[in-house]
Length: 405
Image (cartoon, rainbow, N blue to C red; front, side, top):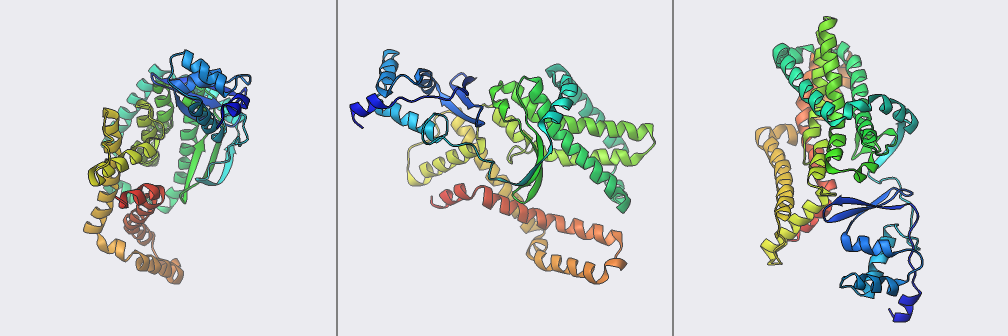
């Protein structure tokens, strides 16, 4: 592009743009009007500060050079165009952010104003000293009660038809409390939260809370927000356990135990559960999954195709190792099922067809024990196929690149 053209290009920014510190080397560029965020380095931050709707590309370049930056007009122009493509400048490329494509059939369950009302009452729980002390005490007390009063055989025998309705109701409440926890912690730390809703992600029903504004906060504050859902479910389970002793109703303790079992999945750091976001925030690595997969692919290129070595820092080694361990554990789980129970996987379609046929032909005469045993038998092959589909769908791009090397 000619010098004359650079003299005529005057970039500008929306008034809704904010620049926030993220860590010692990077900053967060936030446009609250379209709820879009971009992690940028210090040079890009300095460039953005110079965009005032009056300076042209050549003026901005001159100012950066005076500040000791080695940069030319083409680089400044390309940076502005990249920002425009993200919808963060007043250019032709600006677009409003659409609803995330991964969330389908979503609907709002609790509007923001009602979430805000409840979060105002509960936010004291998320003072760091209160949060960590109460969480630790609740975990220790629940562990003691569960070990003392529950057995696996007793849990199995307790699963009866009359348990389903109270279990469904308490699980629904527990999941709402989980999302309310995220929103309330967000509010305590001075960040905005949105509504609580319900949708489907990869065919799986999920609840969600809009806490995207939490990226403005410091790492240790975001970690509390990440764990706030587990915190609320743990408190709810403890309340049920205490009520079971006050009312002499052991079913409540059993339901509390099942709630904890369900929330334990959030401690998996390799899928996008709460522990994944904790790890991402502790290390200040946004998009941890994508970056680790990319680093592993680059490492494979280096090992197989003699490309340049991508492992230069401890962070690089961690990212490559994280992706490798993640893929390895998922593959190991699938292989273990095939080795120790291959028939349940290989014959699952016919077994499932037989299960449906039995219900259709003899449903009224089948006992509850038959239903319970049949469902438990199919859990393993269902887990196999769900995990396999999850790996293929969520990592299809990374897997395709790996197969090329």
